[in-house]
Length: 330
Image 1 (cartoon, rainbow, N blue to C red):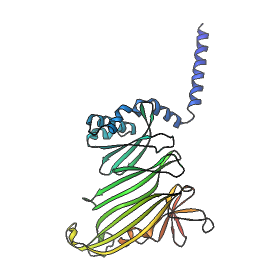
Image 2: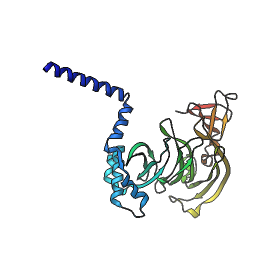
Image 3: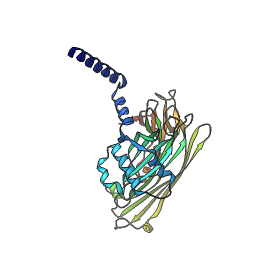
Image 4: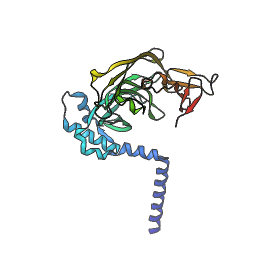
């Protein structure tokens, strides 16, 4: 009898081991199984409906969702500061599965934010992906992706160091889901203001000479046969003589100003918005031009850069000067 029980137990364990090895062929399979079965990775749809069905703020529900997202992401150290974290919630189809995703943004501090993305399954939202180590998000928007059912996601972010480094910046990153992850396909400063002492860049400069540079960009996204982004950029440099840190705004006088237009189009081959291409016939490989570095605010700082920033078809970035010499990026 004991031998029979031992044999049955052995067979059951062997079948169980075979089942587990068949079901979970990789560590990713195990992680996916945990995501879809553990309550730690889930949000109740009735809880989330509060954010879309009510005009008033329920601090208890917000606190519950924030704590859940932080725990899911492994951000336990932020749980003590949950009441100081800003939350915003959106829905849109940003993953190619013909359904809307839940998108939760948490602004953790003045220089750190995170976005968590959930799929809805039945009456629950299951954690799917995250975008980490970004700056505080002021708004999230969405645009159609050519030849795709899902959308691109626009993250408007703000860097405010006006009290310390005397720098304020608003910028946009567009994310597109491809190859099982969210990739930045376009990034652009929307507004920048920086004040600095010229001696910080040039040792022999007058220590009382201050500079203020400003960059402002207007852009328009056009959906025709292809997807285009047209931009208008204005760069201004002001100078002032002052022994105070920082000088008053009315102490600055306009020294230099530049304006230019750019046009980007969506390249399915490069999975990026580019301003142009250089073909293999004219270079070593087919590459997409992402940015003309000469048209940057660094030019106002006296830091000339006569390069293109480009990307190859295999996703490698490098800088190429306009004479077609190039340097690989690290």
